[in-house]
Length: 449
Image 1 (cartoon, helix red, strand yellow):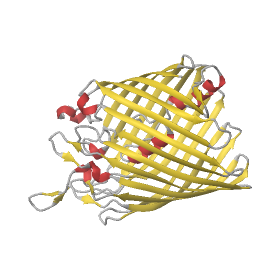
Image 2 (cartoon, one colour):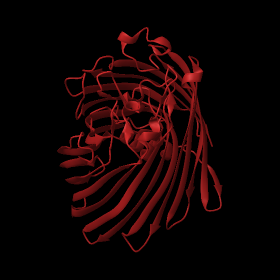
Image 3 (cartoon, helix red, strand yellow):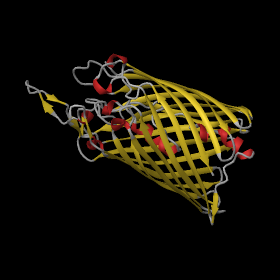
Image 4 (cartoon, one colour):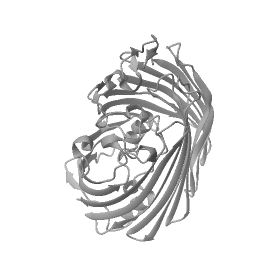
């Protein structure tokens, strides 16, 4: 999915889990691509940073110029939909940030700060936003092969306008996340075991509509708990078989209002915009194999079963086969090909819908044209099936997401880079006024030390 501007893997995971209604696979940022890293590490383009005591500080400043052809992600049938019909805009993104990484021979402590201060030329009072993303991670090394990894993140984010859960908002929905995780890994001969917990708290702000009413998005506040255990067996140095079991628990603070609208009744006494107890629990059981064939082909693949049970009797349970594939192929030292497949269940606030079963596939290719010039092209597709519906709908919602991108990155020196990309993303939905198409052109300049 190419929605906001995720920067680190954990932030990507947060956005993917949240945007259950719009979660085509995210492209890896080109600044973090394998081709860029290899070029930087092998020559004079590596960022040196500022070494101070036991830490190296790596400051950066991005200035991104964006053209967006459809900032509200509207269907073309909504051409004259008040102030939020199909509108384009130039958007300036100012993104200062830095990372601080320890230089210790044992143990590790790292901190990362990213920001995205977006200024719109079109209707700025309805669209400007300021995002902040932080991540603190640590690793504590024990005896050989044993270590404990932990992390904490606080993120102040903006929900994409494409989300069906806040389509009536005058401004985008603001939310913050708190991420806490801890995992212990223990290795004995060919067997390694990993056990731990990931917990994410989502906290939403209410938002006004065009008519002046308040969408009570704060009813979406909840915790997501995911304790898990993974056991792997090293068949031979290049192949590891594994099993993984993850328990899933969603705990909401209160009843959730569908799309933020409080419950009401019509003249016939029928309940409109019903609220739901969206607390749920379930599991994700997987078995698979991880492989590293002479660094030419690396990745992992798995298949399993996913189950989610909902407290509210008006929300039906979801289950089905799931799995993932992550593959990286380097046919030459200058070319990297990546493929991903995933299947998961995401949260939503749609009336009568318990969750969204999303299946996604993605492919990216990176090519180093010169030592300081890297090109990339990518495409992805996601099918999102909504589990349930209410009147006046007569069938489950089914959305198909398509996205494609092409771009180049030019490393001017160790302190300056620039990149240009074009992205097209679209949603084809069987629900009225829910499809869209968006063209984005991005020109970024980075200064770093």
